[in-house]
Every structure is written in structure tokens, then in C-alpha cells.
Length: 573
Image 1 (cartoon, rainbow, N blue to C red):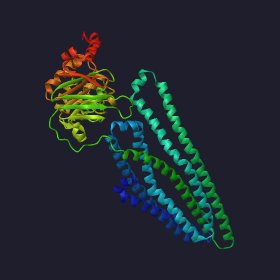
Image 2 (tube, rainbow, N blue to C red):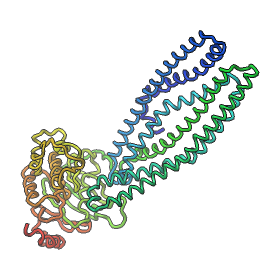
Image 3 (cartoon, one colour):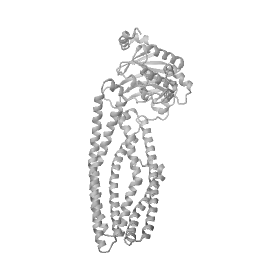
Image 4 (cartoon, rainbow, N blue to C red):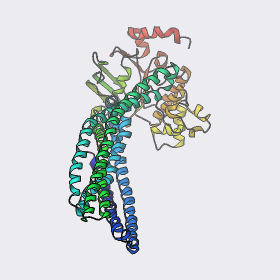
């Protein structure tokens, strides 16, 4: 019911659909009555006039009922599809606003399932509820009324068979309902394995792990199949049991009707009509039982969607920052650990101040906390202790869009989209001109390879940049960040695939074109950052030193150890 608000914009269609369905059901309930008149007043006494006139009425009512049926389907379709579109948009918006720790908790495969399969299950229920629920309820009520009009004794048949059908439906659904939640979780598992293997296809092939990943997928897929089969075994009992009761009721009606005809209390046509009505009544109950499957499935899906919609982002907008500076970053006694981690924090007691326009590097061993440190600046995560300041204001006071609009970041993993090279770069500024796009690419050392592509900047990039080398993907990502013209530009080990010559040209262009921009570079190679204004050395989550290269070579043992470990490899270069 919490999701019912998404139907409000389409309330007119939601009302017209059952109204039109009532018209169709009324026609269906009228047909057995007309047919009995044809048999009793036309066929048996051989009165052709009655046959033709009543037959014409039947044809006209059938046409009217058909129009009502088409209208009901169209109205319910517009209501349910609009409902699903709005719900899917809201769930997607919420997913986009969730913090990294929350999307990690849900998992990508589960979120994909919720946005697709779960919403489709609820959309189908809305469609069925507006048409089939009304249809079968009308058959149940209208059929009983019409039967009682023919003979009260027929009501005994319905009074006996109806509770039996309801009891069978309730018992079977009691055991089936919990299984739908299990099926949804198993589907999450299948989607997760599939998503991991599609995105990591190169790694799978490089390590010749196709067979093991196929086996892992088969395991998840088999678990899904087993869960579905448990539901299907239960539901397989439902239809035959209901059919047995329905056929027994039909036989009972024929027997009672035969006795009534013999006693001349009923006509043959009325018995035929009674058989049709009892079939309609019990068939309506059967269809309602089938709808209970949709209700159970949609109920499980609704709970999963509400989990997403009810999850408030851990990291949310502040009341609005009052900036006193431009392009500055400061860490004040910052400590940080990831939400799901335990043990020693990733960062401890970091105190660091970066001035406007300064070119700063962050260096340290793998796992020392370099990326974790810069992730606190745009608030991908929040510090556990201490505060991070941008432009003199605590990042927690910023509106997120305002904070992140001031920062350009190039991540370790270059994320590109299925779009042209120019469109990928324009992510930095959607209104940028072609000249600005080209200029950003030139600074990023990307113009050379883009210009050689078949369609230049209009060349389509494959999904996730699969058609490009690692260095080309990095340079496109750098061009995107440069085009943004941020106050603070962060390179999170994003030049690792570039040779030193290309990297040197890039840094020279950056100094010339973005003179007032604060640049923070995470790097593994000292050769890449030794010309920076200052270098922050991170050692096991702590700030070991923060000074220019020459000073670090005199005073910082950690830095000197890193330098000596790389000197033999990079000295010649």
C-alpha cells in the first residue's frame, strides 16, 4: 500500500478500467440467459423468429462487451505502465543518491533485480487487479445471483463447493508465499554472478577461469531453479484440485437440473444456463487463486523495493556552506575506517593543509590509505573522527551537488560510457563547445589518438571503454575532469598507464592551463610527482611527512626507502 501513491496520477485510467470490465462481465453474464431463451423458446418449439431475434441481441451485446474489454485492457495498461515507470524512476533516483557503503550492502545484482523483475511483478499485479480481480469478483457475485434466479436449489451446490475451493487456495498459498522471497534472493544471486562476469570478462579469460565461473553460475542458477520448482510443485496441486471440485459441481447441477426438468419445474435451457453460471463462479474462484500467486510475488517484491525507498542516504546535504576561501583543502585530526571493516582504522590522526593553486602529491605503499584520504574530500565517505574542510568550510555543511561541482576527480578505474569520445568528455561540462572539448583533450594528451579514430571525436566508445587501451581510457577520463574547470582537481593514481614522457607533457600542460587550480595527485612513482610543490607521505594510515622532494630526501626515512626501491627501476628513465 506504500507504493499505491504512484497510481494517483493515473487514477482516471485506474477507475475507467474496472468500470469497462464491469460492462464486459455484464454481457458475459447475460449470454447464458439469452442462450436459454433460444433453446427453450426457439429451438424446442421450432420458432425461428425467436432464434433470429434473440441471436441478434446476443451478437450486439457481444460486440458491446468486446468494446468494453478492449477499453478495460487499454485503461489498465496505461495506469499500470505509468505506475511502473514512475516507481522505477524513483527507485533509480534513490539508488543514485545512496552512499557507496549502502550500494555495497545491497549489491549491484540485487539492485538490478529490484529495478527490473521486482517492479515488473508489481506492475503486473496492478494490471491484473484493475481488470481480472474485478472480472472474477463480478462473476462470483453476478453468477450466484443469476443461478438463484433460476432455482434456489442450485445455491446449495455453490454453498458446498465454494468453501472447499477457498480452503484449498488458503492452505496452498500459506506454504507458497514464503517461497517467493527465497526465489527473489536466488535471482539476486544469479544476477550478481552474471554482472561480475560480464564486467570482469577480461580477467576471467586471462586466468582461464571460464569453466569455474560457469560452474559458479550453474550453482546459482540451479539454486534458483530448485526454489522455483518448490513453488511450482505446490501450485501444480492447485489447478487440478479446483478443477475436480468445479466438475463435481457441474455434475451436481446437471443432476439437480435433470430432476427439476423431469418434474417440469425447470426447462432444459435453464439447466444449460445454470451449468454455465456455476462454471463461471468456480472459474472465477480459480482465477482469483491464480492471482494470489501474483499477490504473493508482488508482496515480496514490494518489501524489497521499500527497503530501497526507505533507506535514507548516510551522506546527505548540509545546510549550505559559507566559503571563506577558494581551492583550499584541510584535514583536521581525521581518522577513518570503512563501515564494514573491523580492527585498525584505515587513516589515523591526519592533519594536512593544502593551499589554493598548490600542486600536491600523496605517496605511500599499497594499502596505506591514499585513495581513502581523497575520497573524503568529495564526501564519498565521511570521516569517523575529525573534519575535512574545503574552501574553509566543513564538507558536511555543503550541499552535495555544490561540493562536488567544485571538485574534479579522475578515479583509479577509468569509467567510460557507451557514447562518442566527445560525449564522454562532455560529462565534465554538458554545455561545452567543440573547441573546449578539443582543448581539454589536448591538455590531457588525448587529442592525438582521438583524431586518428575513424570518426574522430564522434567515434563511438564501446561499453566501459572496451575499445580503448588503458592509457587511452585514462586520458579521456582526465580530459573529462579538466573540462569541468574545477577549483580542486584530484588524480587518484589515474596516470599509472601513461609512460613518463606522456605524463610529463600532461603535467606541463596542466601547469600552463590550470594555473589557479589546486591539484592533488596520488601516485606510486616518485618520478611522477617529485616536481610537485609538496608531497604527503602516508605510512600505515598516518601522515609521515609533508614537504618538497628535496626536503623529504633529507628528513623522511619512509620516503627515502620508497625512493631507493624505485631508483634502480626508474633511474634510467
